[in-house]
Image (cartoon, rainbow, N blue to C red; front, side, top):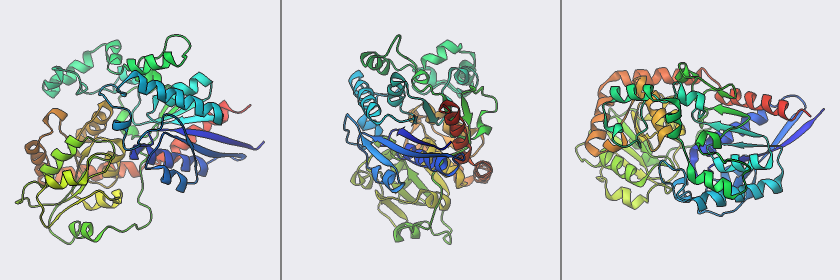
Length: 437
């Protein structure tokens, strides 16, 4: 019997990485649908500069309240680490708006990323929920192997030597580890929106789904317990499609025929202004540097003029706020200086390019530690993200061939998995079981 589904997709549509993964997953779901099944997608939006990408992929958009500027997740959520939102009011408005949109759309299921507002709204309406996440946020994993280091936002203890921190995190009882993830503002907002019973308090409770695909390498989780409701599928990132050309200025800087190393500096669409400016000074603030540099000043992170003001204008340095084909630039660079967002990290690793990175949040810390533990990069603690430290890390990566070799090994591991198809197959199995009637 033929069955056509309408799935609502709810993500942080302001975040380039979330958008990329969502579009790859929806493409995979369309391509590997079971016989007799078909699917269309409607993306919920509060406003985003990435809406044209959704339309280009052939999906519908459904505006919902509250309307946001759509510049960045940090700005729209009034981000207040470790809290996801800056106030109860922000969370309440998002849950209420997405609940109203879903009640009108009446989808067969909801697919969401790291976006607890849609999860809570869907569950309040009784709609089946699927999720895709960068790491296995589940109490089983949190208690057994997910955290290899203390989160950087833990006061005082985060300043201890890493071996001591790792010993401490191993000894912490599971109940205490769960407190790292509490989100009381979102919990209170859920209660005010009519949640029945005790509202969720931990982020993993606010992202609980019928099935969750973890878009990361299974090799990173061999000693981490994974819930049966989750599957680690392999990396899902933006592949290099077509031959979108580089600008002449960037092409000249990245010219592989020149015997000059190149640094690519990016904070994606979700880094912070201060982190980018510090990185830019480290990468291109010294006129005697013996490397070229391409610095991406994403409008969502920092105005172009501010970045230009802190770098030395010289041949071999390009600062741009325009789109760059990330896979191409990463492949031609010798080191990437970046935040630890999953899309940014996976694109660099798929390109066999080592990373010098800084974590904006606990998930990014885990992403960068996976790379650093395999010798393919260096994670600089956020409190040490200073020009001399970054420069020394860049010099280390450029000087030691082992970083490039280990990055190449990770690239081969990424290629050994088809993360998009594997994730789509898991999602389809859930849909067929859940909606068989």
